[in-house]
Length: 521
Image 1 (cartoon, rainbow, N blue to C red):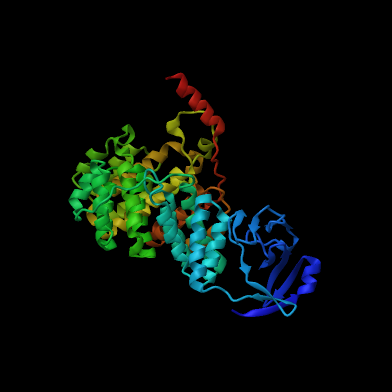
Image 2: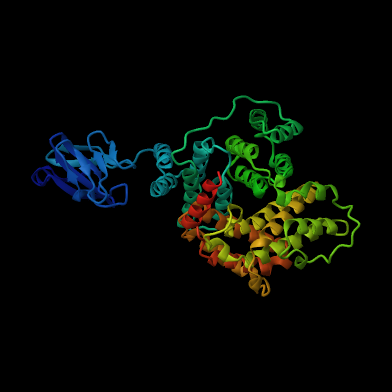
């Protein structure tokens, strides 16, 4: 202990409370019927002075700004979240002395992580930020907060992995690009808060127990049969496999169908990226959440719009028809069936990488030409509830396609055909006036550098929006560097997306659609 003289005991007795400044700290001292207490003068909530708070005879101190309440005797936080720092105090030779020795760093780190669990359960954004800041200030690894949040949330997602884990992989990439402490903290908090939001007030959905020796063919069969029990047992064994071995297996399962509007392939890449960033100890919870997502994923290739997909896949590389010129214009404004036919015709004469470039450029042009009236209108069927996020998926899916197929070339055919489905699906929601005047950005690299920096302060109130801002911008930046011919149009498309007001509450449209739905029951 290090006892520091704070003030005259008689003075405290006369005033009842006093402020002592010791080593740069403001310490509030209170004389109560239960004795003398010392605590941090700054409320752990937002820093308002507790010296100006209300103190009861029972030693309950209330911060008058937001009504947080602390029991000075027990140290318990009665109303609010964070713990109040108290200091040992004693009266000696007519003076009040305070022990200001800090607790061990390991204790501070452990307390911050335990408190983080409470913040996650309460979806308290500011508290999450405070606890991670406390963890790092005590010398802890901020990534441990992300690991903690993953373990806390992974079995609360009823239908498996959500955008939260996928966005975390990208936020951690962003964190590596800055040395600014606030930006680095923001990246961590955005990650864990998204998990908290997706799991807010949700019970746990335990995974089936047990392990089973890894077998890639058996895993694929379990996913196809939607057999979660077998798939989870196999996944536990797969958690120790290197990413180079596991990613192709996950990607093959994701591409067995046009799965979950492409999310399954996107999430496969993000899952492995997240494990790489956080280490093997986090592999099992991340992988189990992903596998559950595969089990419950919708299979879009069974829908009428994409039903030609299996037949076109069977024709890959063998189509003898005269193919149109390999350029994005052959796909612009064409429906999914026409896009698939064109891509298959190209497959007999062109390398997959070249076809990918044309598809990517077409997706970028579509992003520039999305008819925002579609998002604003209040009539029309549920099937036409299309918005900005539907258009961004073609870019993030394309990024996942190139990432996976560069290492596993035999997956190019299903991946490119499914990307064609994206391009064709969005063709029905274009503003053809905009389509006729495609824009470009002269210096795409400079544009993306500025766009990425602005992500740290995106200002979006919904995580579903902010995660798409991050994922789409980073995916487009990578693809612009990988496919330079598409870079100017990708930058222009992202510029329009980032500047767009996105309508998220469709109250009148929902009311009209549900009235029609109920009337037809």
